[in-house]
Image (cartoon, rainbow, N blue to C red; front, side, top):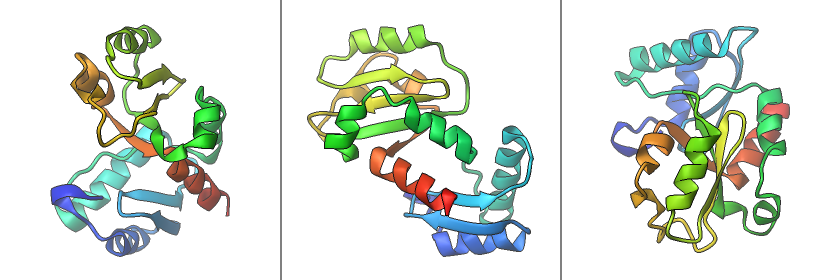
Length: 168
């Protein structure tokens, strides 16, 4: 977890282990946590993780919980397979907490002025940035923040690495 509420991943891992979670692994400094949860529903797990983080660090970030099977489906649904193979750091999967309509995504695509493409999956948005993310102006597209702002994005390298960690 970065930005103004930075938490060291070792500290987050220790807090989660202290709450009884098993096999807690973190990846990078962006709040990627892989752990065993049992059979709790997604919303319950998100709430538990948020409560633990709030209790331990005084902040309440949003968690986007997915099972290994859901992560595998997210990968299988990627409509930018070639782009992900050729330039994985410029393909993002954006996990969403609240439902979205595919028509919202299509309308947003029509408004995008640059080369970026956005597509809807079941529970994620997929975005490709062929000219690079840092120079992209797609974030200024009307409706962008309303739709994409409620999610959290991971580039394709990270998406694949998280599945690799979760399977091990």
